[in-house]
Image 1: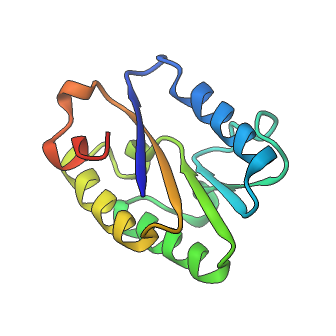
Image 2 (image 1 turned 180 degrees about the vertical axis):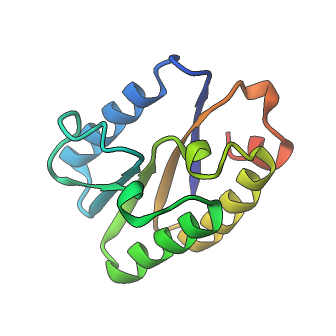
Length: 134
């Protein structure tokens, strides 16, 4: 299942994501993973959530991000939630490609893993392939 947190830059998406992660860390029985760029959330999220910096793994496209998430899920069957902060930065701000990777992630996660993604864009600018996850 994919959920999007959408808004323009500075609209509080990351703050909302931090609140969601910290609330889940207190109540979720499985593992939580937060994928971000540049490790900005190190001191903001609960230590129970695994924080991963994509820059350490040279993730620079939606395809490599998908493969990375698939690898994380394959290596740990106890993951119940994955948070991805700033996905457009990881995919070179390609809105059309975003719809494709979200479809692939939705198929990968099925009903067992919840994936929450922040998208730094105005909702009206999103293509229909992305809007269906709102």
